[in-house]
Amino acid sequence: NILPHFDMVVIGAGFSGMYMVHQARSNGLSVQCFEAGDGVGGTWYWNRYPGARVDIESLEYSYSFSDQLQEEWQWSERYAAQPELLDYATHVADRFDLRERIQFKTRVISAIFDEQAQHWVVKTDRGDTATAQFCIFATGLISAPLEPDFEGLESFGGEQYQTGLWPKHDVDFAGKKVGVIGTGSSGIQVISEIAEEAETLYVFQRTPAYTIPLQNHPVDQSHHNKVKKKYGDIRQSEFDSFAGFVLVHSDLSPAPTLSALEVSEE
Image (cartoon, rainbow, N blue to C red; front, top):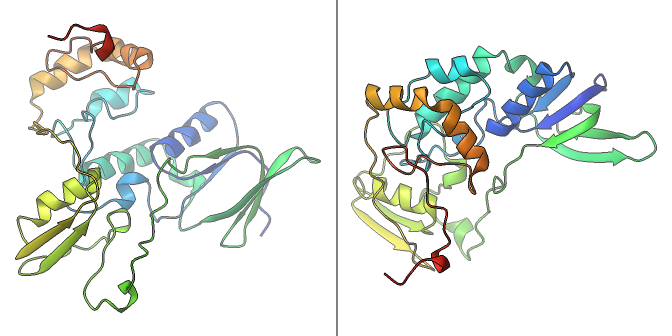
């Protein structure tokens, strides 16, 4: 199936892909997005494991292209959990009619730049071929799950789950013996939740991770109002910052700027 020529093809309908679809349409460009899942949200679509939660303050982990969107959306927690983040992505997709330019349940199998024709040729697993001047790979830095390669795994008789490919249905760990392999951010989050439910929990760790208390709590209306009054300044500070986020202090004061090597021993 040969699709019409587009100005832009976007691969992935996570936060970046959705924004690129919006930007393309806002600038009068024809655009087509392909998404492997059956919904938007990217990271927050696939990572449904217990304990999945953002590690940047919710008020900051949000789009800044629409003042109206910033004003109308209310986060319930300082660090929102996966269901709320997915709700936010879904709200944005619906509010800005992004779905009409996203083809779901479609995986891109090749994207090749045709030097002679000077455009991209993108093919999907559904047999579609699209051409475009621009191709945006909004596929995520670490979005491809690593398939475990442990001897005997294929003959293991129990349940197996991957945090990055978690099922949509709830998984019951009550009364079960559970092993968790890995203590990265996903491992740390899921361990805390499973430990509340499982009969026995074993954690297999290669390298200890450094963690601190999350200090999560509900976001009260006064904090919402305080941030929203300063959204313009906060967004500018984000653009000027090293990591893109600045709400590290409850009083919204500036983040530290000195290197650890520039300060005294004390």
